[in-house]
Image (cartoon, rainbow, N blue to C red; front, side, top):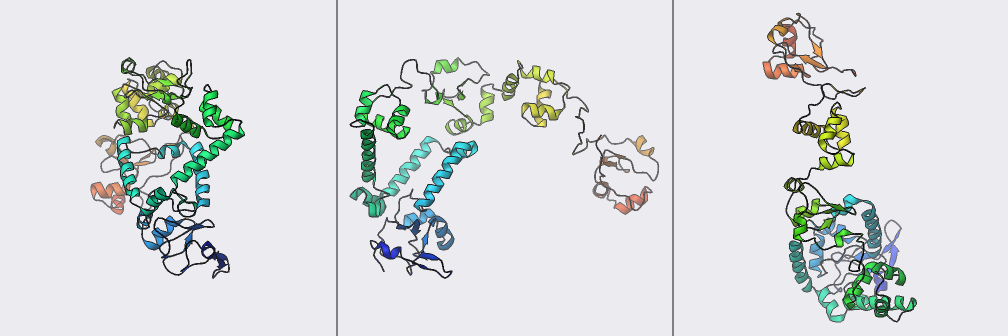
Length: 426
């Protein structure tokens, strides 16, 4: 078996059975790979179970070795957060996920934590204690992380590399170091310093806080907060002074009436942090989203909107309010407005006909013998007077009469269809 340091043999390229170039496949399970090391070569990872090379190792171990990715990492003492896909695949996924994060709001909402902060803190502690027992993490902490074996775990080497990069960027901008930048330009924000040095805003913020320099921005005088979520929670007395039934907004952010913090969306916040459903939150604070919609449309209240649209049908009103037709009936009933009877737009074809009241005994007796009444695509049962779309099934279920017996009893033709017929638009 070849040694791990001899990467040329691991990366030897030959032709496979299809005549295509591929990695040399060592026979059996590799035995010379130390614990905590995951070999990678030419954009592929070595499976430590069978010795094959793959770009995405997680799918392979699940399909071929009947073990999950966590089991694979635990058996070979890899860190819990170690990705089982190669560096090129990571780069493609990072680019795709970043583009999806910027454009898809629903995808961004799915990535938010579903647990509380206390649960996440406990899980993080458990994961940290578990990782400290693995060989890869111990070796990285002991050696400082060498590039050949523990480059993905070398915290000391990574910090040194980042510090060298920051020093190089500062020298290129004409400064002796990052401390001189913060000292000479205390009025510059993190974003301005990031543009000056050519680094990310997050790195500037971390360096500023690590070195103890106070940033301007939201602490400066007369500063207009662009992102209200950065503000501390408002005091309890101001929160209690918010009128009942109102939902304060600021720069596209909503105020949580439970804790006084600002968020772009409150649905997940109130459910995770306060354990309250959004419907209960709205009912507790007297907030009606339909009233807000009415004010957005230019009406003083929902009652005025319903009065102005009293002659509208449910379809048009539901489209205006952004709700279902059933919700429009509930709103009209709650505010004392009767929906217009028979109000339909031009060309409207009902999917399901309205139910008609059953015929009385006198009306049923007045039906001529040998005639089957029909109305709006429904047939009347000559046994009980009920209107139905499937007369044969109704007669069988309610009166235990087959279709042939029903036709013979009421003198109907033998070829008469006892089911709903197509209707034309009114």
